[in-house]
Length: 81
Image 1 (cartoon, rainbow, N blue to C red):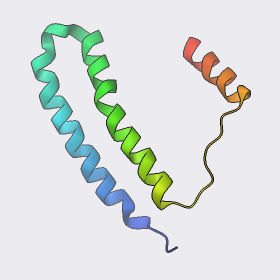
Image 2: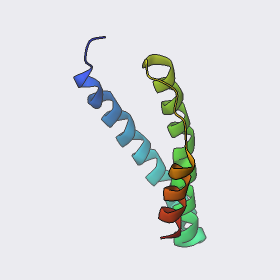
Image 3: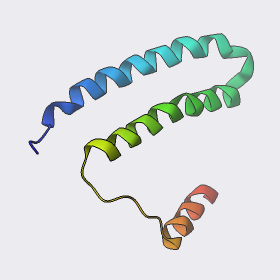
């Protein structure tokens, strides 16, 4: 497989477009406050993250991820911190 060093260009363009749309949408949510705006920020990103993860799994020949108990221990420690 040839290296795709140029892939950062469309990723950056899509990310900046999504950021612009999110900012425009968030202006209408001022009555929610900062907590609501933060939730919208994360909720808006979840579908894009899932699509990106699925596309990586389809197009890149890598082994499937496996999560160990050590992973979840560090994840919990980071979440609590």
